[in-house]
Image (cartoon, rainbow, N blue to C red; front, side, top):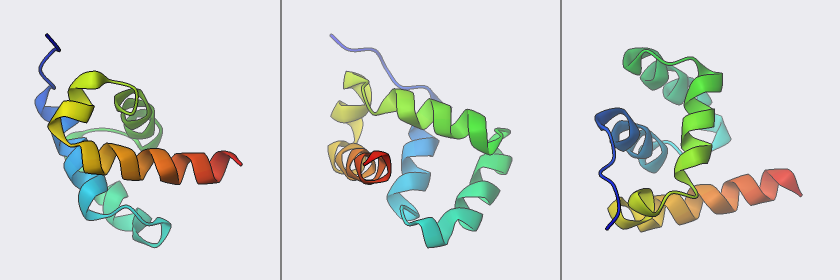
Amino acid sequence: MTRELTGTEVKLLQVWRRWPLDSQRDRRLNAYARLGLTEVRALQAVNGLLTDPAAWEHDPVTVARVRRLRDLRVR
């Protein structure tokens, strides 16, 4: 059995589902601020969610999309 995502984790996935592109970074920053997170802390949390089975169960499409975006940046 996997753990339940916190409310903040669910909201972070919603932010990335809605605004995944680099051109939409300003919108993500505003959303992070509303969640009380800095950009660095939010990105650290999102990166952790990419390997979390609970996040995959909650929203596999968004997790897969953000993984692909991350992998493109690493290359």
